[in-house]
View 1: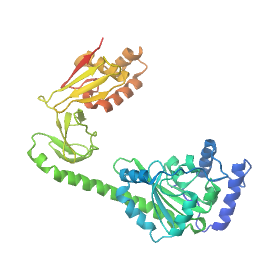
View 2: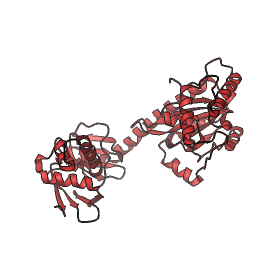
View 3: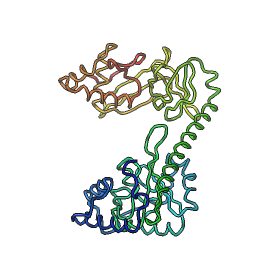
View 4: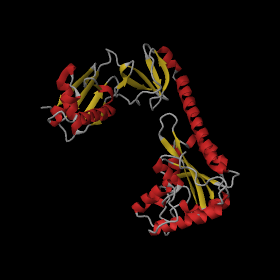
Length: 393
């Protein structure tokens, strides 16, 4: 973990806390400290001072109303494992908090006496504990550093936090790697023990394993609920959840995940080509569009902003486009089956061939917006797609 541990084994905590206080006060006063703080702490203090936070008093917490906290809890990817994590703190001499990916505290557990001390500090549910809000702290610094962080006593920016230690560890979605939040254990500074950091890391690892199990259980429920569809439908198909995770595949070898389906939006699936998604009670049925399920689209350039309407067997699906994306789509329509390379599009759109990277990025964003209507290598309308352009000169 590199610079994670704030205290070496065998350190006299009282003496170390006094030493850190001298370093803290000297650095923040602009004087020469007895020695430099840890690199992690030095980076954080520099960021916080650059933000203009006042080290002389507690900075504003502005906690969210209880209703907003409850809403964030329900939407949190950590909701399925929060209760199990918090049980670790039920009979412990420390506080545990769980935040969202933005550093807002969503859950808290621990001894009543410590919770009261934390309330005075503004360390409660609904409060934002980013560096920008409360200075150097394990939660906010872990968010910035994208790594576990342990802080002891005067390594915190605010003097009000010097009586505490904090050990924070990011939690990631085991499916996507996305940050879900931070698990933090905090307590009186002089009670810090080397085992605390190990405890937090172990709890986070177990939580990530449990999240994967929840994911597998949801896919199994979807697989069972859609078994009658998979058993009666003809041809290759996929059953996927709202995020594109595959619960069942028939007639095609596919990765664990495809693009997230949307009603009426064409979807490109390796091995199946251009597909359409049909809503199921708990997920989606994805099948090739096929020769008898033509996809037609209309690009309307007559209004104040471009509008694309797609029809592919269900209700029409509409989405606004940027002017640049509309220009690209119209160019591909004019190019016919031969399509155009990124260099050719660069010449038409920008007057030279020096914008190939920009063109590729724009088309990547366009494909995210409209699905698989646009094929690649070269760029062209996908096979089976008919596009009408209204108002195109």
